[in-house]
Image (cartoon, rainbow, N blue to C red; front, side, top):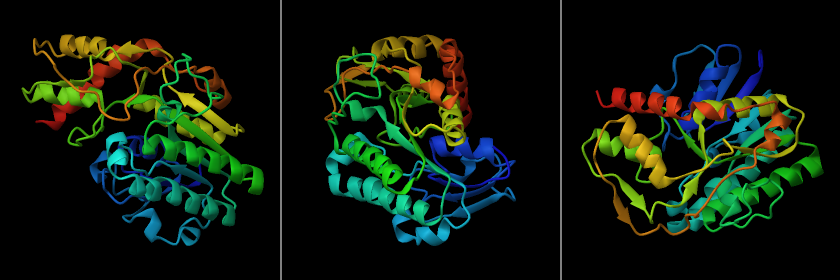
Length: 311
């Protein structure tokens, strides 16, 4: 993608910063980010001449004015925590659903070519039809999951009503450098790594036999860019198509970090699902193939990033 005007909401966040870094050399990038979780130093060059940064909440802006002359929108800004959504469902709806509808309306008014939306495997809930296909009926078990499912419906309705092209990417368990280790709702891999590096006891919620489908953040960034350039309108799982238990995952992290530290098992968290694995056949619709043999190499790269952060 070259010589385009691109808006990235949440562009300073974990995934958004990776997309920004991939695109900024050859495109004009506008980031809207309230810095609630994003960090300016996640960008390779935060002073890049192609970057315009708006440090505000989406709901506080005149989005129609801010989307003028924009070709593509990558919408990542959201409340991303399942536990926080359970605690504050109204805030979750406002931040995730209301914001998205406002953004879609601004896209229509500005003739945006396409919007790529960051959805989540959480919309599947506790569906046991593994591997999970995009045509399964959503069964959200948390306000967060319900908000993502609602946004997917709004995306389809805006496509049908106004011709706004879209792809909704259902991320499974994303990991990699720049994942927020300080968040109380951080994902399992950075929690493991950070606890061990700081000589603390890692925690597993539940018995550890729950399974997850992990995908590297670099592949997720590529999925976003490919989706924007594709002609595909609809939903795509972004995952490896494989699953491992959390106990198995910890064994790999433990071996990689050469530690004998054992985990502490706590009660399951409300809203968490038991098993997750994607059918990834729809990745062909956005011309993407994920190499599933690189997991341990990517895990080592992630661990090295966290080590560097602690120096």
